[in-house]
Length: 106
Image (tube, rainbow, N blue to C red):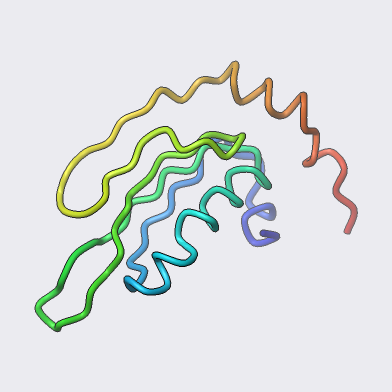
């Protein structure tokens, strides 16, 4: 998490990825939701998904997540577009109710 926090301040974090199917199934959503909550930002994560020519399978599940960790949109596999409203009032509300970024000590 500190890698992302070192880049602060930001309101939206864009994360492209190609998780394998096994690790994606186990960790993809969990890690994205954690990044959104701990950095109090929206996370937009595009992910390759499906079976590739090499035989490798990637998990997919492109997602948009809000600062509270709620999943706003998901695209399981394949080409496509997902959309969600990124609400600055919601962002400020979360940062006020959970002031974690103000309580950091290093």
